[in-house]
Image (cartoon, rainbow, N blue to C red; front, side, top):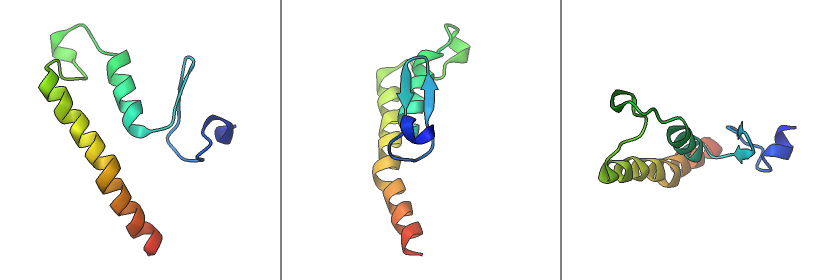
Length: 77
């Protein structure tokens, strides 16, 4: 069943309502956007645009630089 949801055969995979999300960065973004609280003290996501961009910058850096570097290291050893 998992391979039908995620053709890449990787984890994580999140099924939420009609969405199937197969990337951890997008899963985090989705959860923050979807389950944001109205209370100012319970924010999952920065309200300020520049702060959100900084979060996205870290997520994209991790997936494009760190993940690739770690994957290459693990495959070579």
